[in-house]
Amino acid sequence: MSDIDFTFAVARIRSLENSLLNATAIEQLIACPTEENCLQLLAEKGWGDSDTPLEADAMLNRETEKTWNTMREMGIDMSVFDVLSYPNEFHNLKAAIRETCRKGKHPGIYYEDCEPSGEEIEKIIAEKDFSKLPEYMAAAAQEAYETLMHTRDGQLCDVIIDKATLEAIYAAGKKAKAGILKSYAEDTVAVADIKIAVRSQKTAKSLEFMKKAMVECDSLNIDLLARAALNSVDAICEYLSGTAYAGGAEALAESPSAFERWCDNKIIQTIKPQKYNPFSVEPLVAYVLARENEIKTVRIILSAKANNLPEDSIRERVREMYV
Image 1: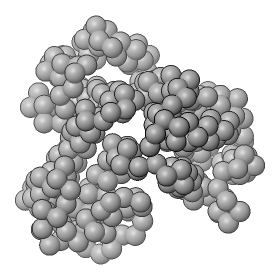
Image 2: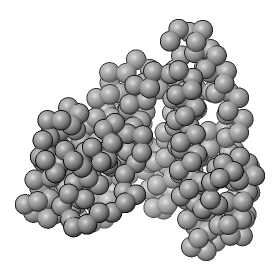
Image 3: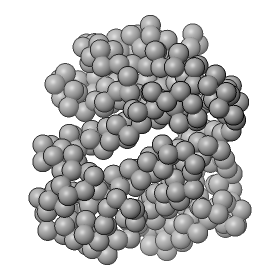
Image 4: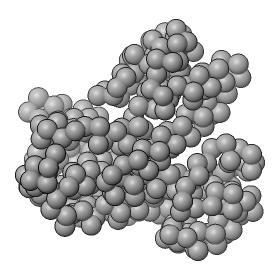
């Protein structure tokens, strides 16, 4: 698309940004006494459709569909968003492998709007014809499948697929022309590596395990990060304090929920400058990421309400908004 085409597309996105939930709207949701009240408030704000059930999954799934339908309606080359679709594609791979290795059928386990679809991946896995999978997925699929079949170690199977997901994201980010996709890929992989280090420290995982799970990136030295994790959380914080992810060290020292919140907020902070970019595909990518963050935050609030968590506890978990 030319700059003028993007100008019109960005103008529409600017209009749609006005309907994104801001901090005030999030506070209104937190103040709702029940999950049902939250869903009613969301419906009043235009979430779901007239035929969407007043149920969390139905409403959130519909909002995800709306986001991607909007991108398609604007005639965007959807390959631009490939790097954002990899988590769902590899989730489907993980689900397909498990489905192939167990008895019976389990509906609703796949994300829609993925290529290849979950059902297609499942058929390929069942036939062990891994070459039919996308190149960035084939080797990991075969290794994960054979690992699960021979060892029945579901965690190791997940580690193999999760690492392949990060590698695909990082490779796509490196090739992308849009700076926002490069930054997104860098931060996504780095934050995932930090999460692996933190969880490995708490569960006393070995250096070998961490190196199998982590992915190299420019902004972190995963060898130093993994060795810090062998010592203590304080050692992880000390290492991070000298990197672009020093904020993660501060959040980690505060609480586990603060750290999880920081991980997601880091992506939002990366994309916020796109609110002032009138050209290129980058504001459109930022909008998709903002919507994903918004939907995730609403899911957190709805889950908290369903479990009767107090408002202060919910506030500790909610993410920073794009607007």
